[in-house]
Length: 578
Image (cartoon, rainbow, N blue to C red; front, side, top):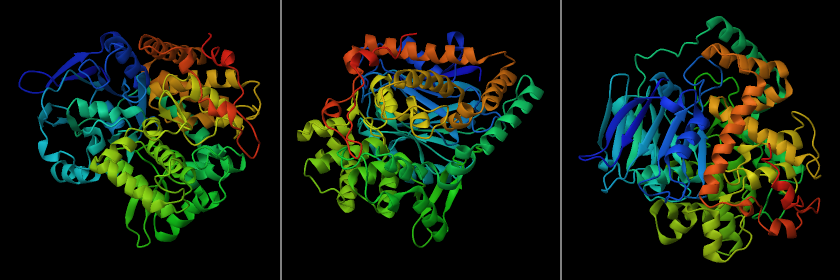
């Protein structure tokens, strides 16, 4: 990965491609690449949908190689949802294919001054940019069918659905999986709206004739990768729980802990949680001929994804993730797995973040637009989003926008981004992460659930105040570095618990690049990334007052523990003191 592809969407005569070397971005990958480009090249005070913003797509440092579980891809920009810097990442095949094509980043820049849409086709010999107006308002799955007919299913596709074209603040960017389904999404922060503003509908990546990326020290890499995979397979979470039940294995766990936000964060437990749990989901999939164990990209050792089918065995969607099942399920009082799967498919097809959509619908339920538990009403609201009606545009701009439109104070958001499936009053480490990460409320930015609830990497009482600042700080640093590598975040369970697995992960990078990185170097990289992101947000107008949870969480106690979020603001302000 020794080059950057820049697409100037405002060039005379239509978008133009230029290939450059890495320059100052050498050694960067994934989130490190996207955040460094955005920090260096995007004015922090620009409008997210204006000409000065840029959309940066970057595979991780290890993507495209034989490194196990390393196919994540990062998408970065100034977020239309938060107004700050954003990195959203996805699984699927695009990270692997893009890396094998030799590109460390694709940067969409400039102003699309027309209403035209474009398709970008990239293979080892050329970059072709052609009009794509025939695909206007085409949904992601229909687009995938059309692209498959033209290019076969061995390519990878990055695309936006109607939500991205409408520039909705909850619009996602879809990435195709191993079966060429647009089921993996860079969902958070409205990155799809920026791709829509640039006038790019779809990017096709074809690595025909490109070999696997070769490590500089093959023997060192091979030995480290072998040890790394062994560590993943012997850990209870990555080797057993996730492959068997997917991420939704957490539903019963979090519900029992009293941290499962229900009815728009009014309660901490959901009476019908067992009906939508990972165990129930896997049983239903197997009974119908689906598959609860599936890798979203080639080379994944964990395989936490799955295939959800209807009663006749027909594909409906990929196995809905825990956060999706919660957002459209427990949060809205919906306990029907088929309805949740349909909502998940609609989100992916229209091109929407499942978390912000589920939370927005929960807010709409509290506002009285429909009742909690109304699955058909939720489906109809999502149909409105796809059609771009006035009501649909309110919901499609996310939970914060929906709350403002209907006068609801209980908007569970930070920096305008909806909170995921863990109530921060009952898991205080994740509350610190929600409040302070530059990304807005984001569980993946510093997954304190690992230590607070699952007791991975230590044991910090989820209901206590002690140790939460340090826990979130350390996890945010580690996560920022991990997001640069292309390794899936779920490897964190094994590397937090097994020192030898962490060492093998670091040594696989050393073997790939002929380096001598240590754990201290990983920490330094994480701090560098976070510092860049924090500085961008500061220049964009963010202050310490933006690193706060909604006030109702300090005032309203959540059952069954009857707790509020009581970590002092002064403590939150210490997270980035290093």
